[in-house]
Image (cartoon, rainbow, N blue to C red):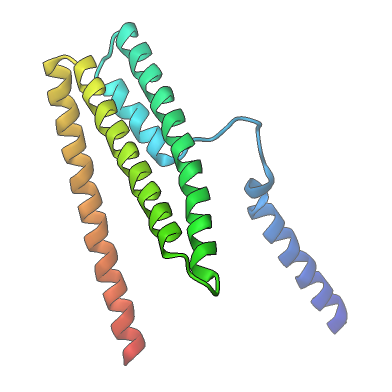
Length: 164
């Protein structure tokens, strides 16, 4: 009788685990976007953009994303090279400095691309749309700050609870 109850409880536990975690295994084939993509889409929708503006922004975004992605791949390779050079028994300082300079140049390129993209984005908006955009960004920053403050308070509380 004891074994029957144990097997029943184990079976019930497995059933409940699978039932409530079935969402993990469900995939409807659509690509899901993260919260940043969702927030950006909401922001864009609140600006009431014309079709021409939407097309221009989509073009800017895809072009910028591709350019930055290419540079990030180069950065990743250079960082691997730098790590390999630093791990060698015989250090070649000239080569290490050269790789470090290349990394700095690529990081500067990314910054330039982001600045240019921001300028083009702003040129696409009307002054009224830009004001709405600034207000929405300010709201988001305040929400982030509130969340960060809440998290730091919770971490501090856990720390002191652990320390006691």
